[in-house]
Amino acid sequence: MTAQPIHVAILDDEPAIRTALGRLLKAAGMVVRAYATGDQLFESIAQERPDCLLLDLQMPEMSGLDVLKHLGQRHIHIPVIIITGQNNENSREACMNAGAVAYLLKPLDVELLVDTIENICKKP
Image (cartoon, rainbow, N blue to C red; front, side, top):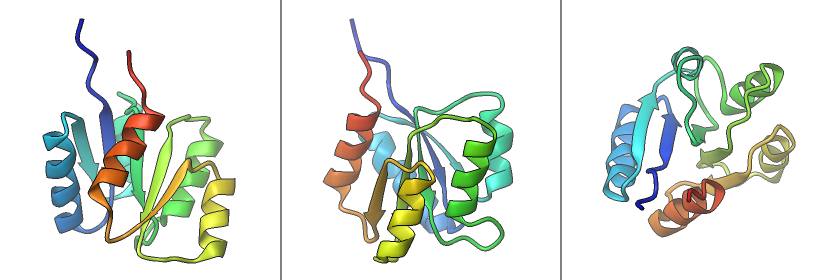
């Protein structure tokens, strides 16, 4: 019996980051859907829930922290991994308090990212 692939959503406003992360995670055997805005993400997860969400913290219209808060308000329970260039303890604490399960710094360590996703999305 083969394990089901992990379904990962990526929300990042930078197209190059979405593309790079998508390629990396697909190469690791994951199924990936990428979004540029929070609205696109919410529209999609109304239809299909990913196993986890990679969420950029700094975005123009709706920040990653705003997205986390909206997920909580809508009672949408998806493990969220924050990805950011900000090594700021206040941001980290705010994100973790809002429901994030991990806070990873850019540039991302590929092995750490894949391990983190696999650990929080263990599938039989």
